[in-house]
Amino acid sequence: MAAETISFRRILRRNPLAGIGLLFVVLLAICAIFAPWLAPQDPAHIQLATRLAHPSWSQVFGSDALGRDIFSRVIYGSRISLLVGSCVVAASLGIGLLIGSIAGYYGGPIDRFVNIILMNAFMSFPGILIAIAFVAFRGPGIFNLVFALSLGGWVGYARLIRAQVLAAREKEYVEAARALGATDTRILLRHILPNIVQPVIVQAAIGMAGAILAEATMSFLGLGVPPPIASWGAMLNDGRLHLFDAPHLVLFPALAVMLAVLSFNFIGDALRDMLDPRSRIEAGL
Image (tube, rainbow, N blue to C red):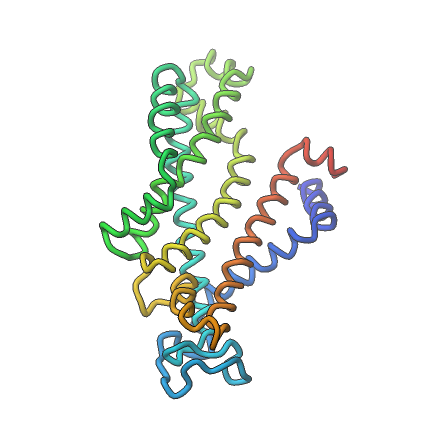
């Protein structure tokens, strides 16, 4: 444990962007958890008298076209981004783990069907188009949004896990467990999956960035959470009509999306350097 802690500290020293990303993710989580106490105003409260107000001491991020406080809406928007992103990654990882493990472990016709037909069928369509079509048919909402983004998001995890399981199933410890009479389920859960978890964690961290960006895209198109719930993508959509006379309507939610995506990407890179022995050797860690 001490060696891992020292390695992580060395990575932070060599890659300060990882520390910045971790700091912003922690700040984002705090805003999401304690939004009712941190937000100075109700994010849905309308004040037409202060509509399109520029940033000031009373409203540090200004107000939108309905007079709603942008700072409060950005804070509450972190809840939707983290909730949707976490649920999408968890659902995609769960589906990909199941399908990829079965295909990689059993191989043969099962692997050919999953790898050649099933995965290629989903990869032939952009995931965002599948999500748009599904939400347009089912209607906006958090559950529909998470389900729609997970429809295409599981393929990347499945391909990664399949490749890792294909390599791990030929290892000596797997052959020994099989010779001792261990069941396929036990071999997968107790011997293979714990030894392939490192690249999966890195993929999940980077997947969080993609899920947050996809949620913002769907909300920008009006297919995210319904109003008046605050969402960064919906705020960008509301502010695009006032891009020149009130650019702060777009600037602050866009910065929030950009920083969240960059932070998870920085963390993913740091985890890759920390968990991959070859990267540690090359970096002198």
